[in-house]
Image 1 (cartoon, helix red, strand yellow):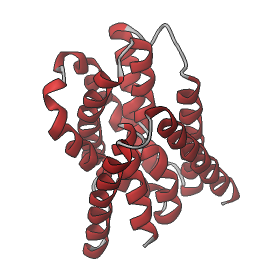
Image 2 (cartoon, helix red, strand yellow):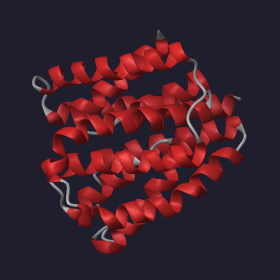
Image 3 (tube, helix red, strand yellow):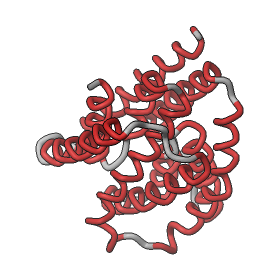
Image 4 (cartoon, one colour):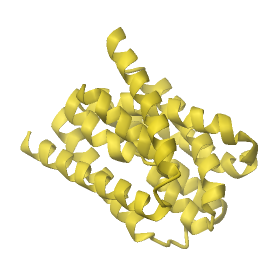
Length: 234
């Protein structure tokens, strides 16, 4: 039931804020299932949730704008997958905790970086996101930072983030394989995603975007610090 609750919370956050499943769910999933399995499950769940959102918004996606991001991510995913396979479990927990916490703090601060603009910025953000997504399941913040610096509106960001989420998580799973879960566990995850999307849709009409975003980032920071502590303790 704990896994069910984690997936519901992550899916609801993603539906509510347009992003954030990995930031909220990855720390809990790696503590529950281990670093490798937790990240793979996060990749798979994020892929399904992004696809569900994209089914409603695909007409707003501009493929030309996404090409540099996707190409750079595809080139960097194998390195991230190798990194995840090579690191011992405690070290991977620690690295995941640091990355999640740092990503949450950077997005909280709305960091402006001149180099994260134009084609070069897209390539840098895509490469960082692809590596981080395959290694620790947290590729979203790099794309969020790129969007902030590129001046994307929320209406522009959401469909493109969903498109990118489908592609980068599919690439990550292709490089690492699916998580090894039993049939009943897969069913539980699927039910959690469905329930979370429904809950998130209900909340989206009642919770303003600003407070929702702050809640997501606070949860992510708390989870990241907990995962870091677990890794260091191990």
